[in-house]
Length: 459
Image 1 (cartoon, one colour):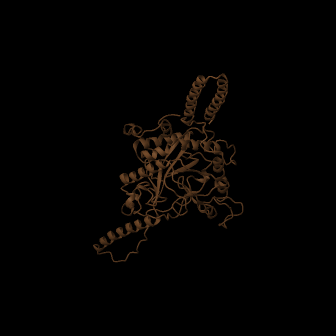
Image 2: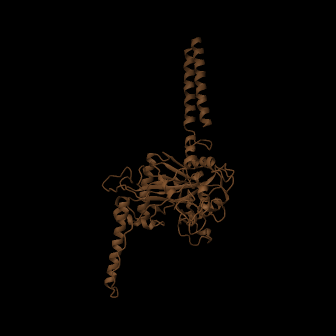
Image 3: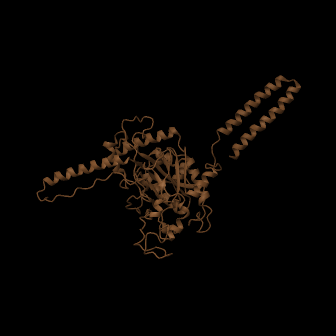
C-alpha cells in the first residue's frame, strides 16, 4: 500500500512540474520545447501508472479492511466475497463435476441414477455431504490461494498473536508464532444433495436390498417369520452443530496432533437462504467458550439438569458427553438456539473461530431439475451445495510434525491418516518406505508459496 501511494505521489509531482514548465515555455515563446516537454511527460506518466497497476501484492498489503477484522473479532465469523472470479467459479464447478464422474462414477446431470455412488466417497456416512476428495489439482489450487492465506495471516495476527492471559479471548497455549508463516491443512469437499433426492436414492437402495433379501428367503425353507420392514434412510443428512476440538482439552497441548485456530471453506455455489444445506454457526460464542466449558458445557450451569447444584462444575461422564477424537457434539439446548444460517455467495470464503459450534442445515430444500441447461454453471441445475474445505496451520512445532506426515500421505496419494477428518486410521505409526513415495510435486504445479504451504520447501 505504501509503494502504491508513492507511485501516485510521483504522478502528482509530475503534474505540478509540467504546469511549471508549461508556464515557463509559453512565456519564452518556445513552442518546440513545449511540444518536446509534453511528449516526455506523457511517457513518464504512462510508465509510472503501469508500474503502479502491475505491482504484485506484498506481505505488507492489507487484504482485509479494519471493518472486516472487527467483524471477525466480534462474531468469530467472517464472510469475504469474490475470492474467486466468475470464470474461476465456473472452472471449479466444471472440474468438480469431472472429478465426481471420473473418480466416483457420479454424473451430476443424472444424479437420480448415479448419485448412490456418493456413498463410496463418504467416510462420514453421508453426514453433511462431506466427501473424501483431497488431491485434485483444481482443489489444491484453491487451497493454496495466496490471497486466502494472506487473509488468514491477518486474522491470526489480530485474534491469536497477542493474548497474554487465559482470560483473554486471544490466548492460546502454544506461545508466540510468526503470523506470516503457516501450512495448508488438506481437507475434503462438501457436496450436499437436495434432501428429497437423497431420500429417494436411499429408498431405492433399500428396495433393491430388500428384493435381494426376499429372493434369498424364498429359497430358505427355515425362514418362516415375517421380518419387520426397515425404515429407509437418505444417503446424505445434515451435520449437526459440533466443535472440531475437545472443549475440556483446549488449554492442554498433550495428546494433540495439530492446532488449527481458524477454519474456513470456499463456496462454489450460492447458499443465501436457510434450509438449503448451508453453513450454520453461533456468532460471538468464542467469547463465551471458556466460561461455557467451566459451567459444564452449558450457557447456564443450572439449566436443564436439576442434579447440578448452583455454581458446581459439571464433570461427571454421565452428564457430559465425551469427545470423539477432536469431534464434540453439542447437546446444550440453549446454545443450539443460537446457531443460525450464514448466507454465502459462490466464490466467497468463510472464516470461523474453531471455538464456535458449527454445522450445516437439517435439510437442503433446493430443487433438482435435470431439464435446466447447465452449460454455463454446471452445478446450477442439480441443487447441490458445494464447498471446498481449506484452512491453514500456524508455523509451530506441533503443526510442523503434522505437516511432515500429511506430506507423505499426499505423495502416496492416500487419504490423510491424521487430523480431525473422522477417517479410520489403521497403522498410523507405520514407517513409509521412501522408495514407495511417488514424486507428486512433479505432477502438481505449485507456486513458491504453495511449496512452502504443503511442506516441500522450508520457510
